Length: 358
Image (tube, rainbow, N blue to C red):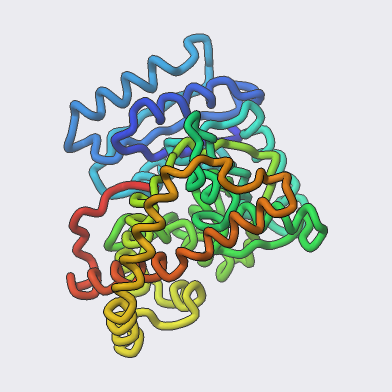
């Protein structure tokens, strides 16, 4: 067995099933890989676990000889589920996917090739593939902002750098780019690093922290291979996007407490210090009215047709889209700092209303 695909899932049986269906149609020989799906909360909720397993097995190609394992896990978040599957995986290469990914037929073949090339060169690496957002039928301006800017991920900047020659295939993108929605790694490297850290709030940062540990321990690079494609079938609304920022702020407190060196490298400051908390309190209070005004305009983006600004091919298209995205940055920072303060007040680790998400 050369490759193991690791997928945590929670509350999305149909999306997980579609992801697995496409993994059953890979160009890679079926005997060379296995698929492992961990159902977060499947131990406590047997009904949901049966529903998810039934959907996945119904979607799996009947004639496929690839090993498919579905594992009910305690409700503990994505990192803990990945650790559970890591213990069971037998492939020398791991491919981590989120449950809302739509793998292209050659995804695993490209990841396996990239890992072999990295091992034959300077050193083993973490390899991220391309994860373009699925374009909805009723496409809106907000969907386009998410796709074409760095509001969530930084693929737009990476693709530009490759296109204009400021980066090449061996460029190390750094630990902050190690997104687990589409990433491969040598299994031995992940195990030797100790697997994934489980933070008090189980949303966010475990991918960055693993990549940071691998860099510190082994000098591991993060490489980008845009030909390893899995589309991201997750439509964000403005409200969900802002809630995501609040959750990241909330999770940051516990993350910085458990992994202070990584947090310092990521944020450039000690976010748990009294000075930082005082700044956050002052910022949230001072900018509350501005954040509320921005929120109203920002939410309206979900109703604006996608063709309200010039197309991506038009010279003014991308600059205008990026200008619109930059207008919300104060609101984004406001939500993040609000989440940080909520977590600090809760005592670093209480996680009310925060669940498995991406």
